Amino acid sequence: MRIDDLPIRDELKGKSPYGAPQLDVPVLLNTNENPYPLPDALVARIAERVAEAARTLNRYPDRDAVELREGLAGYLTRSTGYGVDLVNVWAANGSNEILQQLLQTFGGPGRTALGFAPTYQMHELIARGTGTGWLQGPRNADFTVDLDAARAAIAERRPDVLFICSPNNPTGTAVPRETVLALYEAAQAVKPTLVIVDEAYIEFSHRPSLLPLIEGRPLLVVTRTMSKAFGAAGLRLGYLAADPAVVDAVQLVRLPYHLSSVTQATALAALEFTDTLLGYVERLKDERDRVVGELRAMGLRVTDSDANFIQFGCFEDTHAVWQAVLDRGVLVRDNGVPGWLRVTAGTPAENDAFLDAVRAATKEL
Image (tube, rainbow, N blue to C red; front, side, top):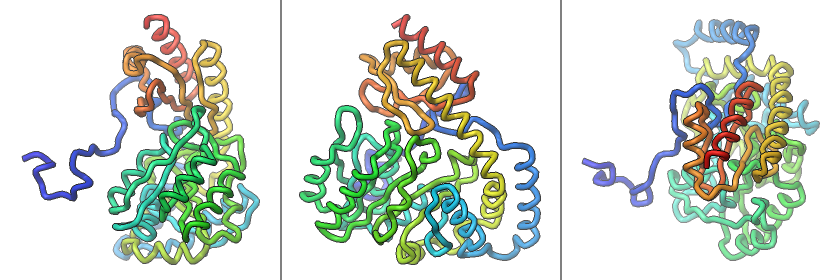
């Protein structure tokens, strides 16, 4: 029996699960992971905190993750200069679960979500998984949001949820503060619309966080993750900042005790090492900018990046370039954007291997 022979929902038939290729090659630069392992001192602190949590694993974890949310609120306040409290923050198993909870609460059957393609593919997949209709808005040729066209799309299609990904995945482009404000106002002019600003990569940006925009805007939500800047992709910890009413609302759909004691303990340990981990972020920002310059020096087009990855092209045969780079031991990502590939910023040695592979591939092809 095939999957489509099962009595699954119609909107899931013929679809493929999200995921990047997992291949055994020397240099993996296709999933936007932080390449730096956690420092030994942090690994030891995680072990201490998890050992403490293990003593009470016969009990359910803190359902409301109070200590963790207080820690995340403190981090946001210190890093952005905008004060948030426990009541403004909610955490879940990765930012994808945060997005799922938001769409379970504000989307669903008979409702729609709008995003600007190309963008993070999970926005559409989570919308589909929650029975939310997916609408696609336009971008300019340079992958920035076409504000006039976006306003027109919002007015015509009247979405219940609006996604703004900044920095945007896979293009790396950031959305200016003024554009976000204009889109929020345009959405609210039509009807009450939840506006989600996905800031998974904000720590790598040249621009400040849009978090302060939640002030006085009860339907604006900023989502974050510890997977990238904190080098904790294996932890699966995401969070949001919003008006307290939104935090209360998502708890209507969260599963009971959804964050394990071990997850909460590990995340709290990582927050203790914020300064060290953000030091790695600064290294990656320098390396990203170096790789951008090197690619442009080769004559390739590169989208301005505010993330820990770079979109580069343009190629007549994208797959051939992807394969030629892979043949030289470097895995990058083909996101399906015609003519473009995406590479994660790695260590200096990984980036050098990537640049050598691209030089060889472009000469060969």
